[in-house]
Image: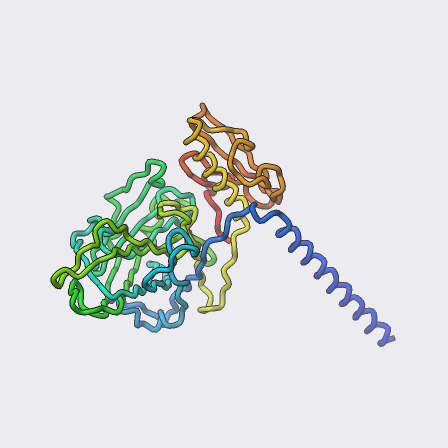
Length: 383
C-alpha cells in the first residue's frame, strides 16, 4: 500500500512539473512571439541600494566611504549617439545610494587636463567641462530636473516644464537649498603645465526637491520604485597656450552619457535610463523591466513619426499608414493596439491599448506628455 502511495505521489509530482514547464513555456512564447520592432531597445538600468543604519556618506568629493565600496559602478559612459560611435577619450562612470532624505551620486571622470572658468551659481556650467544629472521621477517627460557641476564645484539647477523641443523653458527659480556637492581633483586645476589623472563628483540631492511637480513620485521613494535618469559629461577639446588652457577653435564638444540618447540631445527624457530603488541588502536585488515597456515604446514611435510627418506636411494625421512606424505596429502584429486622434490638425493624442487587459492603457500628446490610464496614475513605471 505504501509503495502504491509513493508511486501515486511521484506521478503527481511529475505531472505538476510538466504543468509548470508548460505554463512557463507558454508565457515565454507569448511575451517573445511578437516581432522585435514592436519595442524599442531597453535603456540601461541600475539598482540603487538604501544605506544601512551603519553606513554614512560624507559628501567630500573623495568617494572613499565604505558605503560606496559595496556597490558597483554603472557601465562606462558612451557617445551620446550610441555605442556604434567613437569611444570616449576618457573613462566615466557613476554610483548611486539613497537614504530617506537624499539620492547620493558619485562619479569618476578620468581627465588629464582639469580646468574650469564658471564661478557663479546658475551660470552656464556646460561652457566648461562638466558632469550633468537628468531626472524624471514620474517618467511623464514634463517638469524634469537637470543638475550641472564643474571641476570647481560651481553648480546649476534647472527644472524644465517640458522638453526643449516642445518649447519647454527652464524654471530658473528652482533651487535645492539642502543639496550637498563636493569635488576632488587628482592634480592641479587650471595648470596646463602639469597633467592631471581624474576628478570625482559627490552629490546628495534632496528627494523633496527632486519630486517637485511630480505628484505620483514619493519622497523618499518606496522599495522597487523606478525613476528615469541619465548622466552626461561635456568634454571640450583644449590646448596649452603659454601655460593656460584654451578651447580648440571650431571643434565641438564631446558628449558622453550613461544611457544612449541616439541623438545629440539630452532633452529626450523618454530615452533616459532607469534606476530601481531597493531596501534589500546590497547586491540582493535584480532590476525588473516594467511590463509597460512595449506600450511605452509604441507611444514614443508614434510621437516621433508624427513629428516627422508634420515637418513635411504641416499637419498631423490619424492614419497610421501615413506614419513612418514599423509595419508590425501598424498591422496589429504586436501585443497592443495603437490609435491616434487628431484635434484641429495641429494637435494629437495617441493611445496604445495592450492586449493584456491587466496592463494599463498608455497615452502621449503632441507636447510629448506621457501617461497611463489617466493623468492621476501618470506613467506607472513602478514594478
